[in-house]
Amino acid sequence: MPRERLLAIGFSGIFLSILTALTYSLFTMTKRRQIAASLFAASGGRSNASDVNPVDAPLSDRVLAPAFDRLIALGRRFSPQGVADKIAHQLDLAGNPSAWTVERILGYKGLGLVGVGLLGAMFGARPGFGVALFYGLAGAAFGFFMPNILLYNAALKRQEKIQKSLADAMDLLTISVEAGLSFDAALAQVARNTEGPLAGEFFRVLQEMQIGKGRAGAMRALGERTSVPELRGFVGAMVQADVLGIPIAKVLRTQAKEMRVKRQQRAEERAQKVPVKIMFPLVLFILPALFVIVIGPAALSIMGTLT
Image 1 (cartoon, helix red, strand yellow):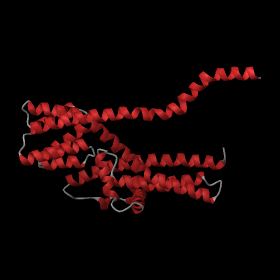
Image 2 (cartoon, one colour):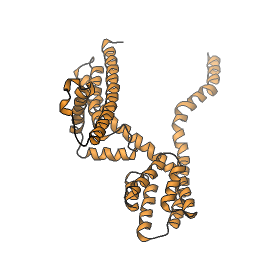
Image 3 (cartoon, rainbow, N blue to C red):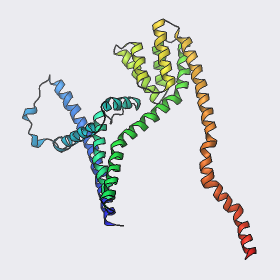
């Protein structure tokens, strides 16, 4: 293996080690800042920060935090205007994971822009400057957009889970309301007896209503945190029923029936796509092997007879 490739592989290992250490340090620093904020609030707003020697501060606060702030500024500089709002919306769709924030995503974009770009340039350094420049630009673009791709994938998987469990949750919600429970109590019942991201969304709706937010506002916020058309339609129907005074049980029964029909239609659609999807592996892998097994002995016999 060429020395340049070995050097690039070594730098890749160093880059991954730095990324792991940076991530761990950021988690530790975030927890420490939360504890410091709690102590500051408990002390009545009195801070003793002036008594702390900067040299005695942890390494993550003295070195890693300023370096990551520069990476955040770099990622924000190369991003289009309004990207922070789009990332925040994608985080809402992904369920707002505890380790993912807008600033952290921008920092990882800047880190990927610099780190993966340098790795790509080192991989293409042997043929010439043009190839190194191409590999560097391709690596920088890949590293810059990789956090967005991972975030989009996490949001897509979570929305698919919500879509799969929505019909069953609607049936349970309809049965609970028709049994005599109020909508809030029925929603709490569904959240306690189901699992997954949809139960978490229902719990969040209940928590928002408990802190004083209206039912319509909490339901609208639920619609903004999802991209599932069925859940958006359910939110719109419940808000309209709450405003116009329509009986909720009838609305829920209609919504549950419609969601079961849409789930059946999605299953039929996926079943109809199976022949098209299986055609490519059938033509590329199964048929050649079948031809070799069936026609191979006959071809060998014909060749032996002719020779």
